[in-house]
Length: 319
Image (cartoon, rainbow, N blue to C red):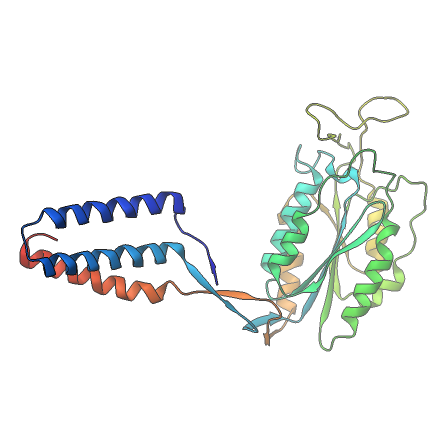
């Protein structure tokens, strides 16, 4: 069991203690029979306890819950080279901010799908194999941080190929599932390599998009230090990263999916709607742990006690 307090405990606990103490003092001073004082103390004690438990919001773990699932394996392939922190997404925002925002939109809209995540910079890494747990995939995205400028050794889209092949082949073995790919990058290749063909991966992909981030004008990149930017070693001036749409369009053509230039989440809406409308729903056992609210177990007793206090107040004119 876990708890998710509605109001922070450092506020609720002192408040309930004050209410309880004030009521007990009034009971002690009241000129009434002892058993009535004890009965009144028990009532207010139970009310305070039940109110505390409801605010605590206890939640019970639920395993193998039946949930509505889409027949989709959705793979995100995200460029995490330093150029993806260039500040030219939708104005002066960082490209990676746009990636995170757009990915969260896709995850929410295609809820019920399996999601996987590959990131690549100097090397490729599978941050999450296909999973039904949406929190896991969002947590995986939250681990993506700007690489240190000294770690960056040039960009290449080729780094993602092997891990893509691994997860796409895995998805292809599943019966009656559609494999969707969202390849998110600025398309830059700066390590001297040539773009390899992704054509052999095309047969594994049913739909998706190569999503391009950045502008032809380009954007500068902060190093993370206040007011400091990544420098071009050849000029010692602020380095400028520009989108390379030719590379991105080539990857899209190889995978036989659309290329979409991104400067707003709305740019991908039509694509996501199309994928959602083309999917089918099934009822399956979830492989993740879900949590179920149990506060209602305390709500009914509290309601009965409050009604009892109302009756007593009406009859006696006091609590």
